Structure formats: structure tokens, C-alpha cells
Length: 129
Length: 129
Image (cartoon, rainbow over all chains, first blue to last red; front, side, top):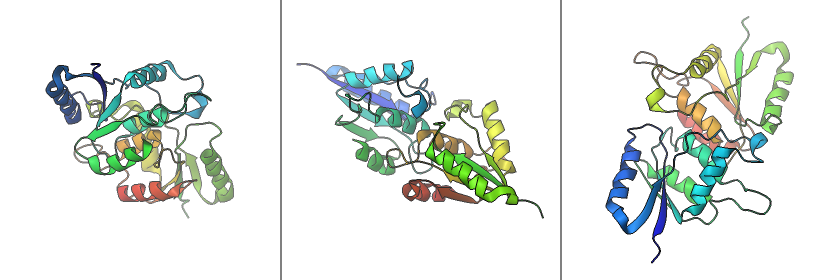
């Protein structure tokens, strides 16, 4: 049976981020029952419609990783009653159409949310998917 | 009488952004009745607690401009039921304490919000202030 491919996206860039630690703990628990990858995305630019087409290289790379995943698992802290700008920026990119013919990658992608502040982030993300 | 100093912060980086145009139109209407400045902040890094102290140069520059202002006027579009990640990231920075002795710059700073999606953004920003 094909292994489920889970992509973990951590909302904090801090190296010792609690949410990053939580993602790594989840990976350990899952073991070899699924493919579990952590998305590295701190090199992506701010979303700007002026640079959207063609997409920057870092965005293309991130899109490939997201496309490959069967589902996304967010691990995110809360800053100012919402998830961090760094994660919001990533979601702004992923929710944009890739081209005239390709819909946004997040459309229809299963997602789960964990973290120390699932409340508001949960609601907002749910609306994206 | 001292002129009120208004700092306009536009939530979109796009050069022809409607919200940027709205800010410039507001500037024209205000004329010389107030000092009106547009914040340039697209060079700031993603908020990351690992690089917070001492603050990066771009953050120091932005903080000086914000400190100088009597009030902030946000002009922001809505992406995914919230303001863009680029603006969220700026607010994450501005809502952090500058040091042990200096509170965040946004605390107590008067603010107004305009744009095509004042609803949810308005609520969230209001909570910051």
C-alpha cells in the first residue's frame, strides 16, 4: 500500500520553536507509517502581484513540495490573534492560481491544524480549504 | 500649531495597488493640513525571534518612522479573509517589545483603517491597539 505523504508546515521560523518541536514529535510518533516532510520556506518573497507571473524560483519549489503531498499538517503559534505573517504570506501564495489553467494548490487539499492556538487560525485556514 | 503627522501603511506591495492609490488620494485631499508619509517596508525580514535582538537595520528604520508619527492610517486589501501576510508580518514586528524597558510601538498609537476590506482586518487591528 502506498504510504500517505504528509507535509508539515510550521508557522514559526525560530529554530527552537515549540511548534517545530511538536511537528518533530509527531514525525517520531508516526514513524514509518507515513512519509512525513517538514516544509522549508523561509526563503520565499513577500506575495506581490507584480512578481507573480512567472513565479519566483522559491515559490516554484514550494509548490512542487505541496503538490506532492497528500495532505498538509500545520503547526502554528499565534501572534496577535492570528497565525504569524510568515505563514500568512505562504498561504497567500499557495491560494493564488498557478496559471489560467491551474487552480490554487490549496484548493481541495486535506489539512489539519495543531499548535498552541488552534482557535482563530483553525477557522481562517478552514475557510481557505 | 504643530501639524499632525500621519503615517500611511499600505498592505499591498503591488506598484499600482488600489490601496496605494487610495492612500495617495487621501494625501492629496489632506494637502498641507497634515504631514502625510507613506511607509516603505518591503525590505524588512520575516519576524523571527532568533533575529529579534538586536533588531535588523530595516526594522530599526521602520520603528523610527512609526515612532515619529502621531497616528497610523492603514490602507489594506484583503487576502483570504485577512490582511496580507506582508502587513501581518510588519504588525508582528511592531507589536513586539523593543527592549526590556521599551513597550511595543503600536501600544496606544491611534490608528485608522481604510481599504476595500475593512471588516475583519479592522477587528483584528483594533485588538492590537
